[in-house]
Length: 80
Image (cartoon, rainbow, N blue to C red; front, side, top):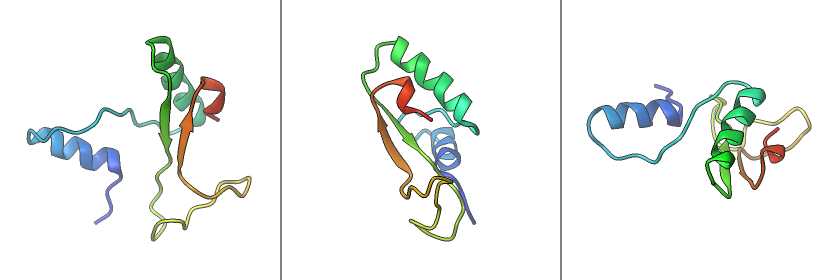
């Protein structure tokens, strides 16, 4: 069975398990919009986690060749 982290968190929360907040999205534009809202609300940093079903950690690659799916973003411009 393959679950993305956001799906597992939804399932755990449904049964009363406390999980960290997060907002899933499917496009870069949507991620930027969410980040803009968080920064407008006073967040100083957001964590962008890219998740794919690829057969294991480190298997996915971005179009620009970058590897790694966790990015610390200090502004909405960092979310791209």
